[in-house]
Amino acid sequence: MEVWRGYGSAYAAGSLRWRLATDTSNCGHTGVNQLGGVFVNGRPLPEQIRNRIVALAHEGVRPCDISRQLRVSHGCVSKILGRYYETGSIRPGIIGGSKPKVATNRVVDCIAAYKRANPTMFAWEIREKLLTERICDGDNVPSVSSINRIVRNKVSGLPSSSDSSRLLSPSTTYSINDLLNIDQKQREWL
Image 1 (cartoon, rainbow, N blue to C red):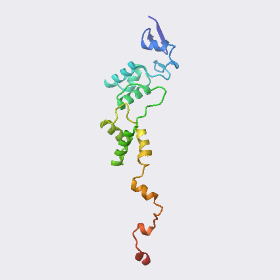
Image 2: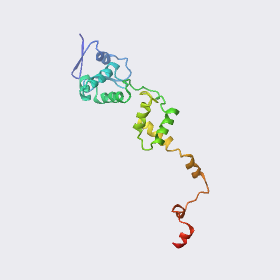
Image 3: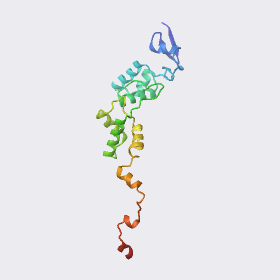
């Protein structure tokens, strides 16, 4: 059996790590991380390693121990588990191209309705409500930052119809006496 040693770790011929380390057709730089694990720069981890990370986490193994056991960086383990806990998916992000638009008109309208009904509602609460009311699923729910951007730009930026008519009226003038409801007789007395 042929064995390749990289930074103190041995890989048996035919194993996944061996194929990754010796395959020159991969786009990107192939290397060995500080834990002795093989990686291809810019490419996601193979699905079987992603599945193993989630399985170990379900067994109660700590992320730092998963990292050492599978020879995958702690940051990578945390990122995969974070995405799994947030969306329920272990699929890697899309490489290249633009992300599909998740803030459809229906989703934006729902976000606006939630925020108008409860102005103190946090973006993460809106996100949870979109999921629980099945307006979105784990794959197409907007991120917290996207929800905040929608609220900032589209919800709070739009004045209500009464506000806009008052703001656009050129004859509206204010005085401190009018605001304090001080009539003419009281003004003379002051």
